[in-house]
Image (cartoon, rainbow over all chains, first blue to last red):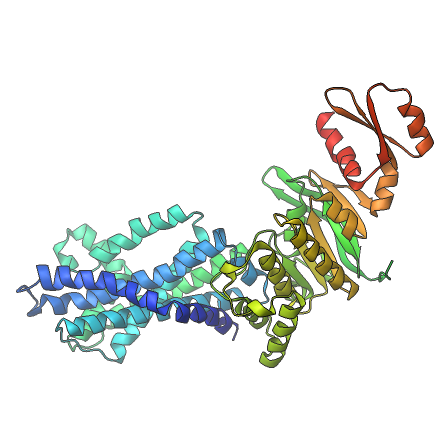
Length: 243
Length: 287
């Protein structure tokens, strides 16, 4: 139950800063919805539905990614390099896997809350989406794997600037290209192949299919699960290496 | 002087740490007994912090061994972790948590059961005189309050030995004395303390024994009195217009005889640990 101690600390802080978190998590999805769903996409139809209904699952996926990655990545990087609060955990008698699991689950909770905020907003914008257990499972896996990526990045990147660079060169392009705002088959073949390998693409695909009332896509689910496990293990490994 | 146990709480043998070509700590041998307050003294970059980091398992030694209460710091990590309390040089409290929550996090990490944990937190906040500020965020605390809370945190799990890395750096004189009192009080209750400092008076006032480190090596070891005797208990300071000369003598008579022969301003006084320190570490730089 050591992971719960790590998770507990994150939730104490999350509760304390919830209003701020809630407000800040409203801003960017609201802008996306206004710009792409309502402004640009009005009257546009995608695969037989409104563009709004096409784009909301994409926005859920990218917000899950961004929120979870940043929640873990930025704060852990700061705690390792600047506040040095990581030492408190490294000195304590807890395992690396308990530490990583606690951090990753805390990032996942934040990502899930951010995703629910978007679904609430989309509902207010008049989008009709099916949100079932599979949908939430896909969001959970997306949050989990990017929170784990946050651990890996935070433990291996040695400055705040490079942390920001990682976001700019890895996270930001994925936000736009991984089937979030448009279908990647419009991209050149070579690029589309690369995009197909990335986890966020499968998060978008799976969420979009489910939101339309379709079945869960087994390949996408398997890809997300694979990434989640691999990145979690990588996170444990890099934390072990620091000790 | 209070009774010192015969138990060796810390045993360091041939401990070495290299960063590439740079040798931070070289072949360190040291034993610290139960109930001792021991200071590692030395100029910046002498290897004090690296030594503490190896003993607290934040850095792996390149070679050599260190035992704490008989447990090997490179092998029996979880056992060692329960024996030691660590107060690092930099402030590393969780700024987003209150004083109480910082202690609670520590207690949970060391798996102290809830009721016992609550009692211990109350007891320690009282001990470091922070009970009125328990529910306040640490980010609003002054430097001295943070330092005291860090000591309370290190004591949470009843460690046998406390590591303090530069415990009073950057504190005002009143706060500093308060920390010294706290260290003495803990020691009188049986705690073994290993601290590093470059404030010489801190070592002289507080510590039973002192080890002086320079360039990764232990160059002197003993009680403050023994070390003073080693360089000479009487100093003659002569000021020749540009810089001060120091000469050390075993007796007052010898010092007087020497002083009568020199021109200019002369001062005769007892030597202190600072003289020992400068004599042992400073001269090498000049020579």
